[in-house]
Length: 346
Image (cartoon, rainbow, N blue to C red; front, top):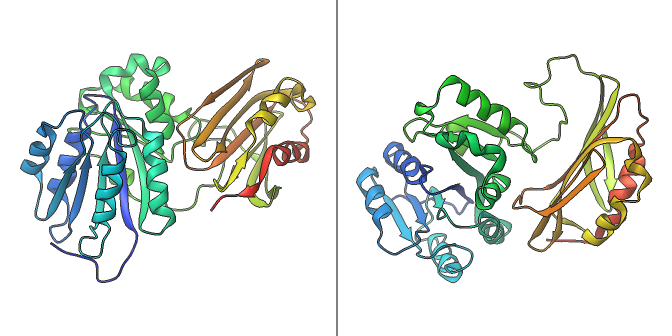
């Protein structure tokens, strides 16, 4: 077993997906190809305690590793105390693995798990590198009507992968790419997994801190003009926003640190009556509304949607105005500031 000479944050990856999506196969592939000198740990959340997946990983693993099994349907519910205990033990100086891979059960809710991990991350013990959602290629016809749990897994993820892509034709891959590139909040990496092999970028840390860009270059081929990057003050938090003007439309977006919470009642109360929405073509926002609550707010075609979401990265908003309509971004800043809780979280 190898250990770190100095205490450092242990990189953690969550690999989630529905039953049969290929989570265990992906982890087995990673264990088989990991550096021989590194000690890795896998935390499995199996619905029962039979340990079949544990045996599968043991057969594939290369050199030093440890597989911890936490039975029960959800790590953050039935196995919460066991999960905390085992993770604390793993992060002790005597253990301190080079990487931790976590596989929630196919019926586990990812949002609560991420909240648990944030506690360890805030202490500097771990670094949650990525949350990966696997979508099996045979589910291509379900993408726009995913079951609630699968939708939660996709919402929580910052990486989305089409698994068993060796079985997918060009049309299936293209349909997946179009669907994934339109997700909100935007995913930092979209890719394909063949025979269980995950793209290295799916497990690597982001190259830079997330910076909002309303337009996605691979989906819009027209020229972008008049790009303005500016500082926006929301409450006591300075956030970075970009405003774009294209096809006679103005658009702006904000990325807000998760340390700031928003008052959901204030937001909902103003949705149907605020003059800001008169010229809005589309508005999307995902905001932290409580200690462990996040909400998605959407407006399009004079309709509003408000629902809880499993995203746990940061708060963000996008606003796109109708063609030739005026845009008052300061008023939108004020709207966000009015709904922001003055108390920042640690």
